[in-house]
Image (cartoon, rainbow, N blue to C red; front, top):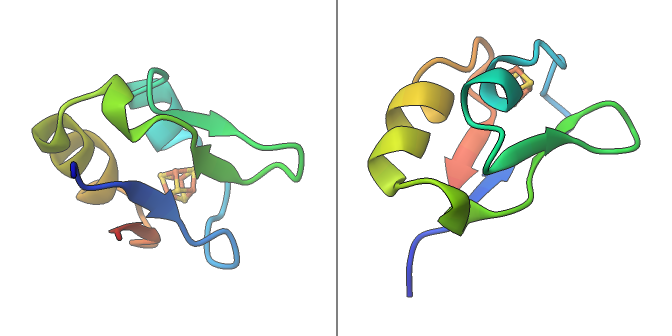
Length: 63
Ligand code: SF4
């Protein structure tokens, strides 16, 4: 099974970087925090490089 990314919303500061970089996988939830709604929307490499590695508070993880 492919890896799935998830956002620790207790830590997310809603900066928007992951949502701007990969809207195919990340969006803002109703609570204003980011969520990964479709890990399959982008490659693992893209999620790693353009979301996980650039999140300013390092709150995006693989399950
Ligand atoms: S990059 Fe990190 S802090 Fe910014 S919105 Fe995404 S999960 Fe939240």
